Image (tube, rainbow over all chains, first blue to last red; front, top):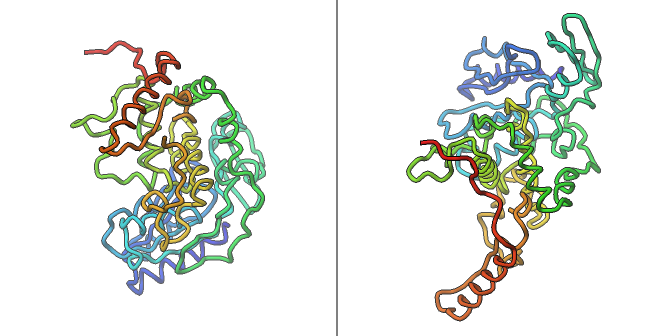
Length: 315
Length: 52
């Protein structure tokens, strides 16, 4: 995956040079290890800052909303599916984009790595299979497979679904992964257990809205939680308000979420709010045979009516 | 909602046309009975005191 970067830089520089795009959206190194940040390269020099490694988990489709210029964008599997969703929802035009596809082998979970080690991590170096983590008085080699983000470990769309350029050969998709083990374990609980599970899950939430801001689906000019006339949901730390926020946000992502994991990654207190969106993702797959962002030519199930739509819940 | 811990049956959906007054009455009766049987709702209540 590291070898992609030369091709990414070369392609980006070419696109900028021949004026096919006005900027390229990619990643650059962050100020702390394992935290790459988005990079908007507008000149050939800025292209040199672009990087690609296993810390590029943020979803870049988030930066496309309502853009007017021509844009080159680096897209792994999930980014590309969110780009498709953006195109379907008229948030960007396909003609404006040159998509530089990046076959992905998964992103690493910085929380998992931090939890495995004592002390501050100063440097993280990786090769194809291993991650070497260095601190002041320790150095440890971890298998990348063991420290993948949970959504990456169960990902079945690692290759971009839409692209104009490709930086490397497509990777083999994972087969036979159990995508919904976590959802099923919740489904098996009793109502009270479920309630308690989500209470515990959200108990640390400080309502910073980082999950919303990192999410490429959350592009409303004014989010329902920010409205005050009318005020849809209380703005307090009361567990009811916190839960209402998470619950409604998840519902807004129904049939659109690609499980890219940007929300969980952005959360400062490490809440896995993907358990909300994943249930909806599972339902969409089971009820409508739908996976979000796979094709720009098919309307999503929630904005079309079909006579065969499931309606058992209506009396 | 049920996935999140609301008891099955507390949330119900129905399709009643404006011309179906009889069905409306029936649905209201059924739902009221079902909800009464479930007892008072204990979730989605704000327990913390409001601050001015």
